[in-house]
Length: 237
Image (cartoon, rainbow, N blue to C red):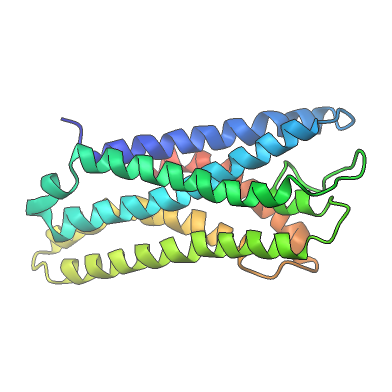
């Protein structure tokens, strides 16, 4: 029987592949043919899918930290707590919640007026960059987008930190050095992925949203959306 952690890794791999497939092809088209336009429907579709995959990875990393917590702190009950039924239920839940959170942003974005063909100052159709092209006051929309982003980032990250607080406390009580090393090695790859994903995302969406930092965040989001999915398989292998 395949361990639940590998099922969760397969979900992470799926999200990473979808992330790249959603942004990279159109980005290459834009770089090679800057004059070629993209339709409004294509813009909204890419934005919606980007939000879904971003929210999914946020929530998935929380479930993976809970899996590590159960494996280290409650090893005798691991097979009972992290059963296949529980894993599938969790997967359906975080995918569904990601879609619902993305719909909140899209419901605010779609009714806005966009005056004629415009150029977006970004590598792809990121929601804040799209909001800047609207021919209307978007203060409320930006506030809601950033509020949702803060909720999706800070809440799950807090849960991950709580899980690893319990893990560290459990590992400290292990007497053998080899046992401690083995316990920490099972968490190191997940911690690297969490640091890369949440670190860049928090800088982009929770930090200041004005001034010269906007241009820097454009390149940071490129790293977050394109290179992070490429690094995750290397980290886990």
